[in-house]
Image (cartoon, rainbow, N blue to C red; front, side, top):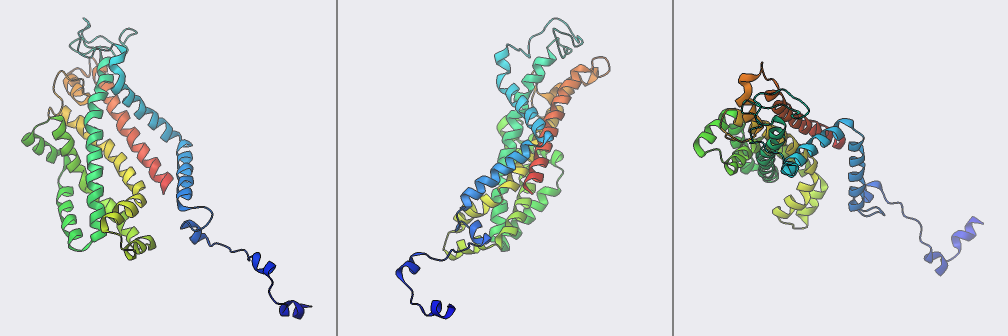
Length: 313
């Protein structure tokens, strides 16, 4: 009967029921299957978030960062005054003064919470500026390559080999220690390191089909960099931004400790450590709590970056 079936002419009913088409996984990833690229990207993002929330170190670190951000934004709402003299000099921690008082009788608890505002006013903005500048230069160097890449890389090499702290001291001494100047200076210091890493990530993407397809379609270089390359290297950019945040906060506290950042009577953590280091043996609390605040924020930012890297790798 097989020869009869083969000899039977095709009918309208036969044509109305097409054979099922199996979509390859590659096409489905490209958005041609039932699950579009946008939907797949949303699903991947949700899986990454769930993976991060299952990591205790990430959750604890995020809570620490949120605590200091909340302290910086709301310490005035609780009636804290980091500048008033309580009448008790170098008083040990107690129920009335949880962190004790400093050599001028000011509450160390109030000054520690208020110091978060100074730490988060310069460090994060400097890290954001460094990330934007470094990412832009890294994408440009990786996309155009040639003499553009060579020129930028040689410039980055010169800036990277300079000791950051010494470079900061020289520049701050020349241009001052105002908040806008510190933000720009920190951004310029950390941008080359970010640019080198983003350039490497872009070079790894340049040989992929989606970049070639965008070029064949006649898309401009700016459009390819902004809409094709940047979204695909975004995880690397976020990780570098988080690492830069930790480094910028530590660098800001270091400058204040050296007297090149915040000035008295600011409750800045680095300045508080420097002002009270003479009392470290007799009144350890005046140094311990500001130092612990700096350490907790820097370590938390580093752990967040490490968890992001492990979850997105």
